[in-house]
Image 1 (cartoon, each protein chain N blue to C red):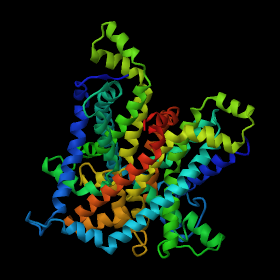
Image 2: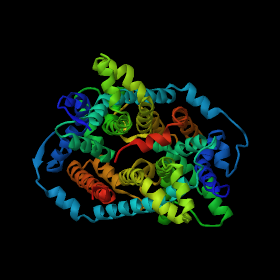
Image 3: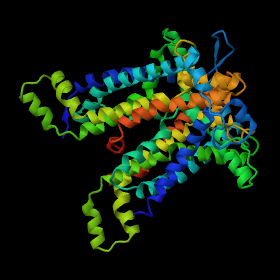
Image 4: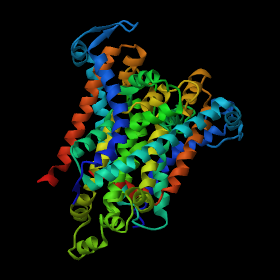
Length: 265
Length: 287
């Protein structure tokens, strides 16, 4: 048993190395970065972080990203909950086909949809809003949320529903006050995945925004190309994008493994 | 047993409308472009299947498709066995389990362009940790902006770094669902480690592994941002995968017709291969 644990340790070290390098870079001065290799920052500086926290084009990038990711998670979970309930409890005309069709949307390359999305959202006048990105990300997040929630709901015995109706609960009251609390782990896991895929996606988010709702990732690419590659600044911005994900994952740490397994195939 | 209830459609209606809005309208736009030629000013001319013929016979498309299949193939044969091996060697319980899972999941939560930028900084020949180590400690001449092999090794390593954890987490979820009684029975029978793996662990992981392989196939086949930020498709065209080529045609050259035809061919290949994987892996369940 002891000898085996070397494998995960080596693997985690491998995962941490590039992250360490990014964080180390973010504390170096530009001069030090360009001067050559150093394993630790020699002249420790917070200059890059200072730039990010004082320049609105930088910090608004983070705020924009967090707004549309949150919006997307709320919309996805809100519409996926009743749908997943329907799939897990009832048979209806075309249910299997619909379920499969939903999943196929996860297979569409974002590159395929970038241009039509731009035209569609411009046509209905919500281009460059947080809502546009949130709605666009629904394409792949809703199917995923339905899939995960359906798995969790399938694990809840039907007797729970029947008992509640016998006790005189109406459907909405049962759904909100009994059913959702019962599968709250599933809601947490589904929300986690929606957050994750919306947070990491860049191509659509970048295509659908210009100024008002520009995500942090787009600010970073612009800096990378225009300012002659300010590595320290780029590294600091990158480091800050890891933090929200790390916070969210900490909250669902006990459900991650289970959440993955509950999806049905 | 599920009850028959057509009113259930009302529950799925919001999902249906939202996804259809996002999927059908853009898809119809793509179909529309794929059979027409445009010279700007919203003037369109019917072209029939010209673009499809052009794409299907173009060497550029074949080359990009070949690179894409090679990439996905390498990703799957590295990440799936590695992920299973790591999951098998993890402790089943204890205080370290959540710590391991959180650290392992971390790469998946980093925005994709940051993953590319991070590996770029990591691999810079003289000032990156990896580049410096390879060049100055091991004495290998490594520069991924010049050498196609080095560029390929780097994008593969980056993807292994980024996504192996998905396979680990899924396999691990399958493993912890195996009751202890199974292992005790195997022990009494004097089963070897291999037979425990082959006849107890692998069958129990089958469902989650199907999800893992499907997700890894779809995502690696559609990968765009990370290799684009890391190598920009170069040196030359050596790492221009299908998505990168598609974006070049659609947004770079603004050739809407060929790009749309290519999108549809691309999407059909993804759908077909996913369906193939799914059917092959769930075949035993049906019999």
